[in-house]
Image (spheres, rainbow, N blue to C red):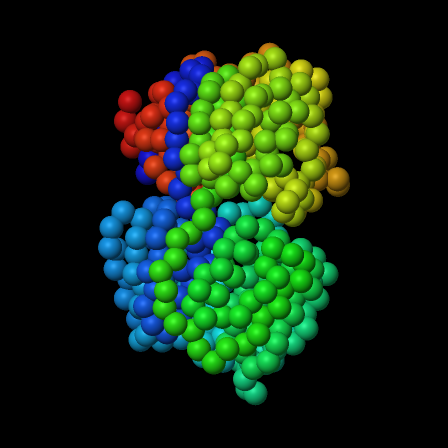
Length: 424
């Protein structure tokens, strides 16, 4: 068991390279199951969710070989369906993509319930609706979700009455090898949906419309292996952008797709930070004396739900009253109690899923917890802002999604270290 110890109050300065996107890497890793051959994936993030996914596939008979830094070859030729370890599956959310890939390759799937961050109910009803439209019959018991397509997986038209990235991706995975044409109406448009479609098309799939609200998948008989590089992580980039503003620092964030960061940049400029977009990097300069603003999370290209907790500590020191309204995961405010320990003045209205933040002069150091992945970055950014020593516990959540964050922050001048709990 380890904790993070931060001596805060230091403006972050310098440049940092963004790693590959976790939310793109996981579905692509599981999509290799459909190939039934060898794929070479490049620019993979070295995070615990990726490591766990490799363990799951190895346990099913896949060969996973690390070629070099951030490069892995995955051979799923001998992978056996319905054999994933439910204990491992239950540690991460992205493991539910096995349902789509097993159904697509084997015509059936049997997978344990996914885990991941707990910030309210995260139902899979839209996933199941999509699988059943493709001919799957679903049975859920206490331990497994089982899907069988006795007549085979067949293309169909599917309308999602809610915007779901996970369901969009899972139906894409299940439909790639299906008979006929599948259309997904009201599909999620996030960059990692597009990245998965690009990977599958590189393997021989026929997918059009990714990035719009209508995706069309023409089933093919088989896929072939390929070499593919994962896109950079817009949420990691956004996190460093907020950290630059919050610490009144100046950071150049490299290896980004600026288009993906427009909503985040707009809010930072609105509160008073300077943002300069370059070809594949972004510079953020924090000036302090920030102004209030209101944020409403929305599906892409709106302000991302995965960036809402990181903005809360910055708004906690802004002049006036700010509001954050969460429309994707209404229960995503568990981090608020941790920030209140650091002196933030935040009240959450659970009926409207809105946090009202009254700006204070400064936050104070405290012993806090990372209650989930992005919430962990909320208290981390608060610790970087705050003069004095902040200790963060349950850091396993942070390590699920941020590669080498201690060394990256140290390279920007932060005084941060990871130490065993109980050590001075």
